[in-house]
Length: 132
Image (cartoon, rainbow, N blue to C red; front, side, top):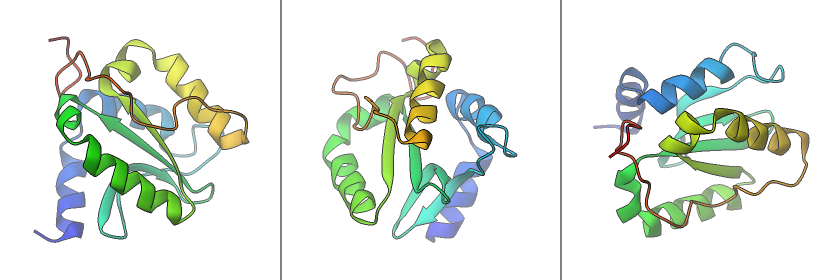
């Protein structure tokens, strides 16, 4: 499957957390910025991106607990291209939406942010964002 086909498949199969975040980000609703979802960048597909601000937002489910090395290498490459990468667990978005949105707002305004890297502990939720 090509990278573009993979991105299209991901767009059609958003997790509950991705749908919730997309609700806030789409159509210039979040601070007037334009975000795209499941966008190919280099050899990767990123969850959400604001090209204007070079900000990438990743939402991870439990499957990423086993992929931390891959995620670190991927994020390092994206950062080397000038992007800021924010990572949140699905349950963080589902349970602490306002806090996640505040972290995104801080990143967009250039203020200090605390969610620059993948959460160090495995997510207590499944891939779809439900409690396990």
